[in-house]
Length: 97
Ligand SMILES: [Zn+2]
Image 1 (cartoon, protein in one colour):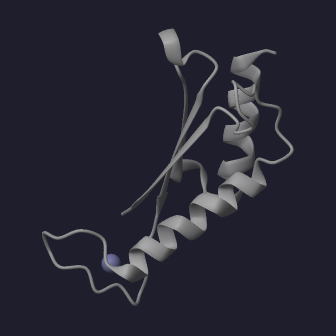
Image 2 (spheres, helix red, strand yellow):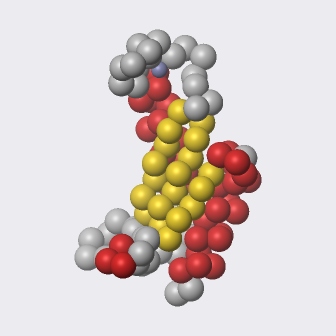
């Protein structure tokens, strides 16, 4: 498998969906080689009630989890290695603007 080509494919799929500037894809290095690290930034939900310095409120947590599983299914056609168990070497991090 060509990891760079795969990461490019991942970036293309997600950029189409979330907008180019909101998606960043990095290939893991060293012992994390083969891993695909995905960073997605989303708009703050309108119903957000986060405290200024606090953790994400439930609305934001739900948004982050929703996007994370959505991104995972968008990538279901992409080929990943599977180390040991059945989970793909894919790390998705969603943050709110
Ligand atoms: Zn919030």
